[in-house]
Length: 152
Image (tube, rainbow, N blue to C red; front, side, top):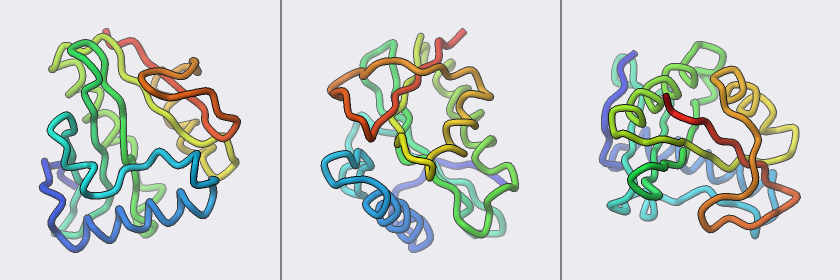
């Protein structure tokens, strides 16, 4: 598996992000969905990577620069066929390394409070993320949980 910058043009990446958005809307009320569509992920403040093996997209992740010291994880997703194979861990470790390289002091995320999101929350906790209050432009929402990690 290799992780590379991606321009959000390939069919595999587009299909993965469409599945991600479909799941978000299936599990959360529309006003509580904070997942970004493809056009929003092309914003200059966002860098997007995909994980591939033999040219098959296994997963993706993005980082949004909130300010020079704080980044936000966006669009973390593993393809259904690649789950439980270490893809999410590899993507998260890549992102943590990138956050450190950029000089960020903190990396945060928003995720759902429903059981559907429990595996993601466990992954983040295993890597040192802790629950926190809303950050950036987020507001308190019973359907959202917020996590953060100080980058050392």
